[in-house]
Amino acid sequence: MLRIQIIGLAFASAIVMSALATGSASAENWQWLLFHSETGVHLLLNKEELVETEGLLLLEDSKATGGASAVHCHGFDLGTIGPHALDLILSITAEPLGTKKSIPCTFDKVGACKSGTTPTVEAVNLPWHTELVELKAPKVSDLLLGGGAGKPGYVTTCTNILGGTTKDECLEEAGQPAAPFVSNDGLLGVQATFSEENTPPAKCSLGGEKAGHVSGTVLTKSPSATLLVLISPLP
Image 1 (cartoon, rainbow, N blue to C red):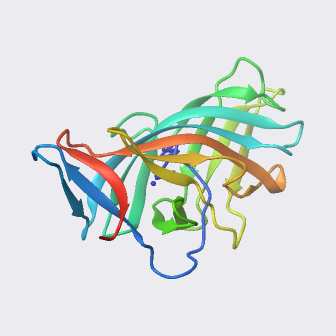
Image 2 (image 1 turned 180 degrees about the vertical axis):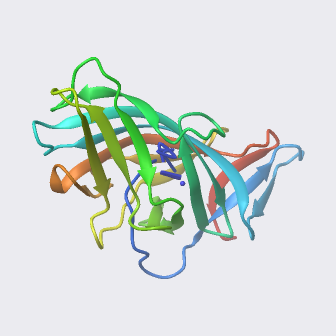
């Protein structure tokens, strides 16, 4: 789940692009694994359950005015999984269970921003609705279906070389599904992987069409030490 979750952003579940639902109902579902059982009990989720996501993403505008810019961001999101294949990203912040929506990042490519300054990223149009979808067995994606107030995306803010402030908002390409691969990650939770190969480019306010790229990983887990978040097909 950007879960963008984003940097769940994690951004989850990264910070991240949107997608349109395609095909029939998903064969994949969110599940709990109960650790306190001797054999481990898997429970399909038929209601919303709270989860946390942590992620490290590289956000790039490859065609930004003044040269390509890219920032590394580490963030957290809070959301829900269930019922069944659905999930929701409620907030993306700079700290776990926090309220600071502006996430400090570091430059990978400065572009027209000023070296030695700290860029920030903030998710826009939350909450983001998402759903597990089987692509081609055994590959599974967590598709971002849409935002609460518009297209899901993010805005990067930096100090420019003239000393002013530059903002660059990157939103989904209309009609193109974002498809980060998601998989069970041992005893940690569910990991989503973003790359140029599996996540269509976004439209950015500076770089224009197909200029925004997201890469990196986010991890979704339960706030409870006795539960493990899993994805699994219906029995």
